[in-house]
Image (cartoon, rainbow, N blue to C red):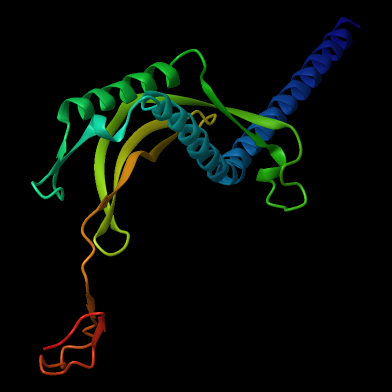
Amino acid sequence: MACERFNCTNTRKNGFKHIVMRGISALIFVCLSLTLIYNFQIIPALIPFVKAQTTTAVTLEMQKIIGSCVAEGQYGDFITVNYGSDGDVVSLETNAGGIALLTANITESAIKKLRGSDRLTVSIPIGNITGGAIFTGKGPKIDIDIVISQKITCEIENEFYERGINQTLHRIIAEVKVEVYALVPMSPQKIDVDIEYCIAETVIVGKVPDAYTKINRLSEDIEESDIDDIFDFGASID
């Protein structure tokens, strides 16, 4: 009788252990399946949206920061225009001190703002990663935190464009490069964001000539004696 009770108890214990082991195995299988789905399906679909929204968010913030740094600045604060005795522009001289101060202010303001308590966050609707146009922009949103690294650089460039006869458009451009990290779970992404911001611009006007001649050389076989490619606007040919 005691033996029968002992066998019955062992059978129950073995049955319970078997159920527990099957449950653990099923749980492990589900976890592995979800991990594979997340790594090979969700992350590849999620990353392009994260990069696009991160670039947009960082660009907008940097434009606000640069705008506040140059709000009271003028063209003359960065460039000195030198004139000749006849009143014509002869050269442009860069104000190195003003440029250096501006770049330092932009970099310092960016670090304080972007690395402060107001951390940037982008939100991606779950429907965007399903791959179907029907669900795009729908469903709960996944919040991804954006962390700004210390790698923020700012350079000032000068650009010149032709804007008519003896007229040149001069622009002072701030080129800012920011390295950020999108904290995607299990797959953080490094994103380099490049921002260009026009600090100031002016049109440099020279003397307008009495005549204007435009020469089009369409091919190398045109000789100097050929004047078919010469268009004169008020000019006279002796």
